[in-house]
Length: 171
Image (cartoon, rainbow, N blue to C red; front, side, top):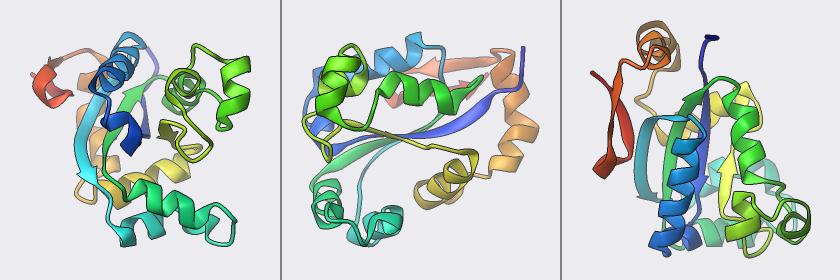
């Protein structure tokens, strides 16, 4: 088995307001062989949203996106599996929800996305983004240390799943 890859995922505020949607998406995560390395529910503060979406600051949708993302709690996950970044993005479906509802209706965004801003989920698009985004929302998490110490145990399934915290821990 190849080394596991980390990715960063967010379930956005409108999804968190729908417990059945959260449950369905969490089931997709688990049945797609992702390991949940870290999990937390957190209401994004304005400074966090501005830092997270800094690259979009000059775009027309920036204010709407920041306002939406600070409107209520979101779920944040560090996920692991082989080819995690590509696989999570595939499960989410395209960013543009209207297009997604036709091209990938069974994707997460196809089922739970409402608009391009309220598209249900976020996923890192590169290893560099993973590092940056994990650093913003899980500042105590040491990626290099995880790969050194924990990745082999996760890869060999020496873990157990804690349902109430939606996280895998090392046995």
